[in-house]
Length: 186
Image (cartoon, rainbow, N blue to C red; front, side):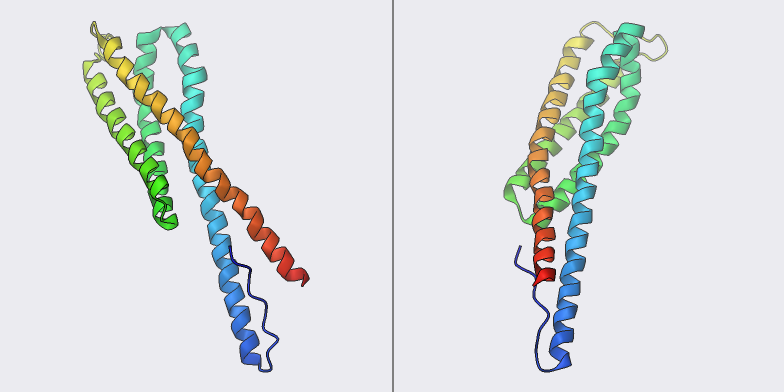
């Protein structure tokens, strides 16, 4: 990030006003970037944290309490909410990749998007096999379900990689603050 322009010590008030306007625009842009970064991080935390908590705590407890088949009918409904969060994260990720003009972030978006499509299609396929009236699934369902679990594991892992792109953005925030502080003292 280039250093902020100092207010001009020019001979005319016009030069000083121009520098103040330029500084105000730069400060507004920095605040927007900070807000955008928080939105990105919050969306990521909701999506990835929700996925992690559900997989680590809810699924095992529900399976133990009500059985894997009944738990699967709950998961089928919860997945709808997760897919919405995933779509929000993907949209924000695409916007961020375009904003940064980052090919590597764009590639990560593409891979995550492909995983998301795979999850959506597999979820639809698995849901059609489930009989909600009888609360049963056919033989071989869990072999098909393994594909869904592997895709979810890939989604989870890619979420960790994504955090590697988002955290440096937050670290950059401190550089912006330091630049503002240095400018104010000189």
